[in-house]
Image 1 (spheres, rainbow, N blue to C red):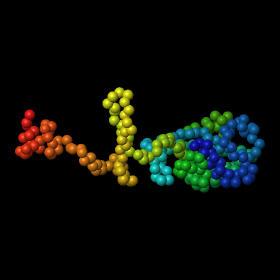
Image 2: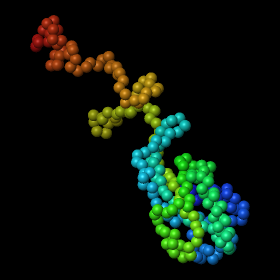
Image 3: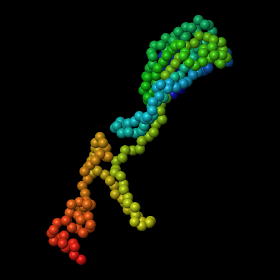
Image 4: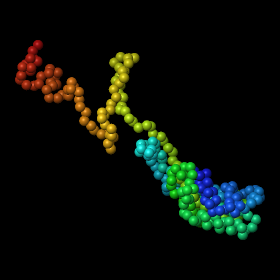
Length: 255
């Protein structure tokens, strides 16, 4: 995600016409050694701080569907991170540096978000707004003097640019949709016996299971030869008596 934000910022500044004026655009740290090697007007966009916006953190998973609406996987919600850049201009004269910084600032405050046409990779897939805040007073992180001390250089004019961007969540793929019923096999009566091909459970003639799916209750007809245990007409004692005073009841008591 970080390199995709870098690319979006690069394209944004290129659209402002900086390269047409012979200005180089780099993402290097503006250290003393780097500044000594510079030999052309340069804009440095140096990333120096990354932290998560925990207020945006979410839990759960989001379903992903194909063109037919079939679930093909689940993805956890994206995590949002604030990337802070130090934007500086480098020329042989302070007046030229200020002019370049002015052009960069005008480009950065033109919109509160990175234009969608500049999104690449996972940022384009997520299709979420990426916020841009330029030249705001810093509420956390290192101070400007501490930052320049760490870089080994002298304090100079700069723009703090904060970008709020999403990092795509982890994806879990789904298996193919179930198109056949459950296959049931009975345990063989003897060890090492062939359990047989089994019997596949399915709802005959059901193309669309409805909103409740195949778990919804449906009427199942019993085979004609199957009787309900304990029903009317069946003697619980196993004598076959119907409980009437007919001849079948008396014959059942004979030995």
